[in-house]
Amino acid sequence: MKFYSAAGLAAGLVLLSGCTPRIEVAAPKEPITINMNVKIEHEIHIKVDKDVETLLKSRSDLF
Image 1 (tube, helix red, strand yellow):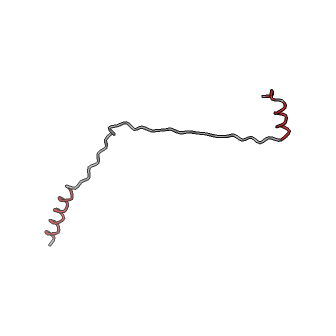
Image 2 (tube, rainbow, N blue to C red):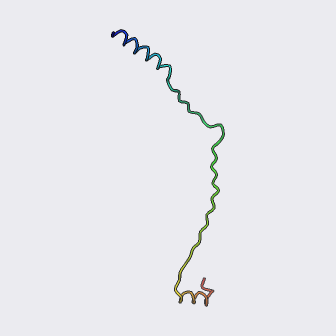
Image 3 (cartoon, rainbow, N blue to C red):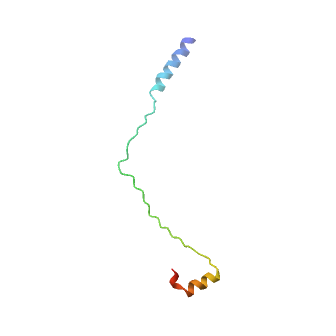
């Protein structure tokens, strides 16, 4: 009985050894391109006191 189980185990190992996975690492044929069409918009809102606003309107040569 031990002979049959040992023979079965050996036969199973021989059969499974033929199914080893193969891993292959290869570089791509075409270069990698990264498309970076990005549009950035922003708005800045400044709140000022009415006194400062009137001063800026009356004295436009400050800036």
